[in-house]
Length: 430
Image 1 (cartoon, rainbow, N blue to C red):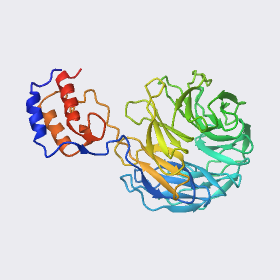
Image 2 (cartoon, one colour; image 1 turned 90 degrees about the vertical axis):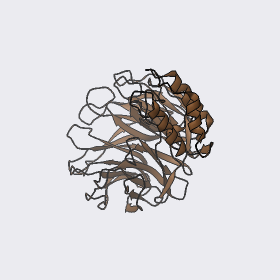
Image 3 (cartoon, helix red, strand yellow; image 1 turned 180 degrees about the horizontal axis):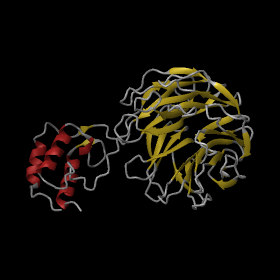
Image 4 (cartoon, rainbow, N blue to C red; image 1 turned 180 degrees about the vertical axis):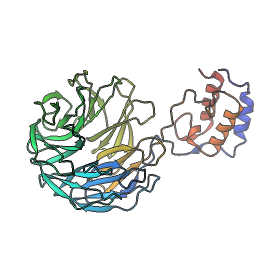
């Protein structure tokens, strides 16, 4: 493709006719955080459409106030004031899923101090019935939901910090649960995630073990019972594990946030539920939570990490093969402990919700501003041609401080953006 033959002089004259140069604007890849009140010491945040209106709401487990906060989305990534629902003692982790089969999302809450999980069924409108409690082992820290026994309802898997095991509670089909079954994990398990790790069609468990610096993989026998664990080394003091296809080969890999070594471990799946030796990637200080999602729109899974020690989140973009670029850090609240990803403002990309353990009892929302990937940046209107209309689009974007005109990525609109555009325009598109 050859650029339309416009002179650089003509373009520069048009630019210089604008009122001024060196505009400044926030063109970061995520907005500065907006904070929303939650309960006392938010420990965990999960996202889902709770009221059936098509946007994602927030539910927060509050450790000290022994409850959960529900914040309904106004449709634009802002949230109504919280509604609180009692949970157990030391509500530490919350997951969402349709537990009673009526088509809406219910809550499961791991209660660290009362050694149980709370189930709160959705009334269908984003309000919740009174909790029902189900016993676990000692010190539950994390709960995940999935169909473990193949009967089409969601069961619970719980990582129990004080008893070095996981609890599996099978759903009776109506949102009540059978008595737990225990499976040994490592030393001080703190996080559990579910996924088909060995490709046999059922859900397996991956568990992050805080004190043994490793993860446990427990493969499902196909009926909701599990084989003995296999352990894989991680970093120093693992705090969170998430599953996703990081290298694009069709199986699920592990990402582990290591709170003392200030990094994440990536363990690539060999295709059979065994894992290669970890590769470590730097984060911020004291990472406590890792979530996976395509943050930059290039069809691979990136990492978002909540950093307890540095009061921020790290975004690590995937190079496409399960290796990751250096982190970019974004301010959150005080002592962020949990991060979840979802499209909160309805614009088609993934935003961040962060539970701040040490702030004034709040959640941070950071909206995604990653520009969509385009084959040629100088083709401003993406019509496949380089012509006057691209120049006009650039002029409008520059004058209105639209981040599309920030060609240098420094959040300042000045001559260097124009120069970079001209260079790319003159070079043509592939």
